[in-house]
Length: 344
Ligand code: NAP
Image 1 (tube, rainbow, N blue to C red):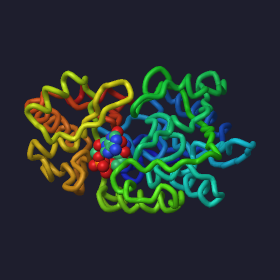
Image 2: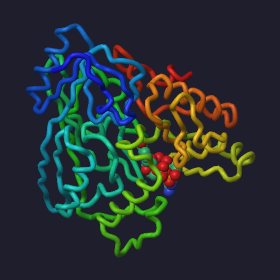
Image 3: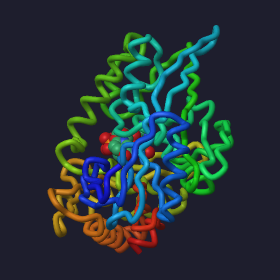
C-alpha cells in the first residue's frame, strides 16, 4: 500500500488524479480484509476494475480497491456451455479464451476494454449484442456484512448500458464473478456495419472477432495511446412521434427502431452535425473519427473533460432539443456523483 498514488495508469482516460491509497485484491477474502482496513480509516473506498468507464473529476480522497479476482471455469450440457469468470479477468481475454475453446457467442463484444466485473454494471454492448443475452448470474459480496449473493439476470435489471449496479447496488457491493450461458445453437449476429459484408453461412466466430477488432481499431482511439473511455454519451432513445418531427428537419438522421417502437439515434452523428468533430477545449477534445468519444489530448483534467461534455451537451440540445446523458461514471473526492448534474 502506498500513500497518495497516481490513478493515471488505472483509468483509461489517463487523468492524473490521485487516490490516498491503492490496494489490490486477488481473492474474495483479501477483498473483504482490504475493504475493512480501508473503511477503518474513515475514508471512502472505490472498487475499481479497469477504470475504463470512469472520469475522475478531482483527486480521490480515499482508497481505490482494485478487484483482480481471477479464474475461468467452463462446464457444459447438451444445449450450452456455462462459463464462470472471476471479476478480475480482462474481458477481452475471456472472449479469446472462449473462442480458443471453440465456444462462440461473445465475438461481437471483442476488444472492449475493462474487466469482467465491470461488464454487467454497464451491460456492455457492441455490434448488435449485449452482455444480458448471455448473463445467467452475477455473484456479489455485500462488503459490510461479507454476505455473498448470486443475482439472477432478472435481478440485475439490465437495460441499455444500465443495470442495478449503477443504482441500488452501486455502493458497498463488489462484483466477484459473472456466470454466462453460451448456447450451442450459435447464430452469427451480422447486422451492424462491417459485419454485414460477411457470409452468414460460412463465417466463423473468429472471423467475426477479427472483423470487430479491425472496425474498432480503425475508428476508436486506442486508450493505451490516447486517453478515452469509449462512448462518452449514451445514444438517445426517443419516441416515434419525436422522430417524425426530427426527420422532417433532418431527413438523413441515422435512426434505429427498437423492439418497443421507440427509436435510437446515433449521438455521434448529432454531435458531428453541430460542427464539433475534433473540437478542443483545454486539452479535452471530441474525437475526429467517432464523435461519441471524448479524448484526453495529453495532460487535461477530469473537470476539463466534464466542461467539454457540458458544452457538447448544450450544443446538441440547442440544435436538436435532445439532452445527451453520459454513459461514463463521474468520480469526485468522496465517490460517485450524478454525471448529468455535473454537466447540466
Ligand atoms: P456506428 O457504427 O458509427 O453507429 C453509431 C451508432 O448507431 C452505434 O452506437 C449504434 O448504437 C447505432 N447502430 C449502428 N448500426 C446499428 C444497427 N444496425 N442497429 C441498431 N443500431 C445501430 O458505431 P461505432 O462507434 O462504430 O460502434 C460500433 C459498436 O460498438 C456499437 O454497437 C457501439 O455501441 C459499440 N461501442 C461501444 C462503446 C462503449 O464505450 N460503450 C465504445 C465504442 C463502440 P449502439 O451503441 O446502441 O449499438
